[in-house]
Image 1 (cartoon, helix red, strand yellow):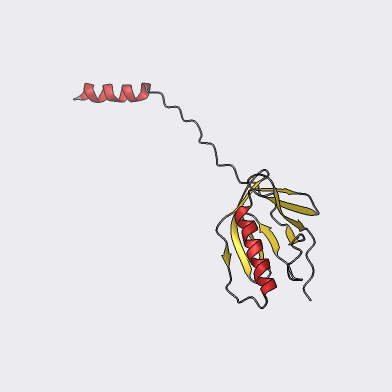
Image 2 (image 1 turned 30 degrees about the vertical axis):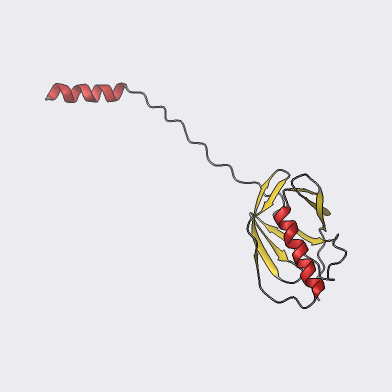
Length: 141
C-alpha cells in the first residue's frame, strides 16, 4: 500500500504546472467622461435643445422634452449608446416632440465620434455626421 501512495506522490511532484498569471482585464477608457455637450445643429430644436453628459460608462442629458440616460461603449473613435431610458413627461409643443424624436434617433444611429475641447461630432456607421455639439452648456436661469 505504501509503494502506490509513494509513486503517486512522486508523480505529482514531477508534474509541472505552468502557473501563468491571468492577465487582468483592461479598464475601459472613457475619453468623454466628465464632458458636457449642447446640440448645435438642430435648427428646428426648441431653445433648450438636447444635451449630453458623460460620466464613466454612462451618458445622460435632456432630449429637448425629457431627461434620458444610457450605457455607453467607447473604443477609440467608436461610440455606441445602449438602450436609452427616457422620462415620460408630455412634450408641451410639437417643436419639443420633434427635437426629442430627432435626438433619440441620433443616439440610436451613433457609431463613431470625433471631439476636441470645443466640439463633439456624432457619426453613423458610414461615418456621416448626424449631430454636432458644443462643449459649453448654458447655465440654467
